[in-house]
Amino acid sequence: MTNKYYRKDIFCSAYAKDGALFQFAIKLRNIPGALAEVARIFSSRGINILHGFHTAPPDREDAIWGFFVDLKGSEEDVDSLVKEVEELNVTLEVKLARPIDNGPIVDQLHFPIMVSGERSIIMNIKTVIETFNRLYERFGSGAGFILYEMGKAAGENEARSVSEKYDLDKPTVLKVILAERSAKGWGIPEIEKFDEEAIEASIVVHELFECTPFQGKNKEAKSQFFRGYLAGALSQLLNRRLTVVESECVAKGDRTCRFISKIY
Ligand SMILES: [Zn+2]
Image (cartoon, rainbow, N blue to C red; front, top):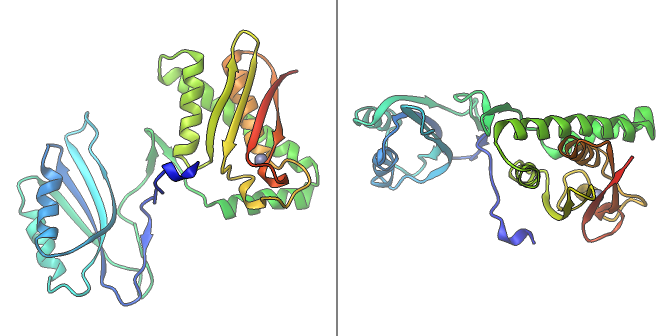
């Protein structure tokens, strides 16, 4: 199932124990070929670009290309590389950063993070699960309710925001919301059923962040936050008070997680 996807590494940090890492943040004129001109400078010297990101929105006159390079083994002096990139006609500005002392190089040249045009934050799953676990330690089974309600607020907000942003019918809004869950790394949802008339929905999720860490370790279904998220999104979309149950879950040994809507 997941084999058809390439892993997406978000640009943040890099480490090479004996490397010579540098970060470039280059502001370019937003025209075809700008990237190629910069890339030519690095490729002609046999320098491998390790990791980066590029953005050239059609409504902006400038584009950004940020990336890490390792100059170890290269004869190149970084300051002359900067100078050469600066001299290109397509270049508007070049910023350079180095590792934090002897540690990793961490991107401190780009801020904030925008996802689909909205300011976002990134948290790793381990941290999220630790925060969820702390709620269970403190509040017992009440934690499930808290997480469900948190998810519900998030799902309602997302359904509202996607509906307002694009002029789409309800099945397409749901497709967009779920596609964004996989683009943002939550899991890989598939719509099994979405019947507006009967007010019925069934959604299968592979690799759900909330359940996959507990694979086969739980007696019961694990998801509360995402279950609430779907309840919020579907309620908002169908304009009915719905709840969602997780009928199958990888945490209790099922092959995947399956969510089914119920009318209150
Ligand atoms: Zn699950």
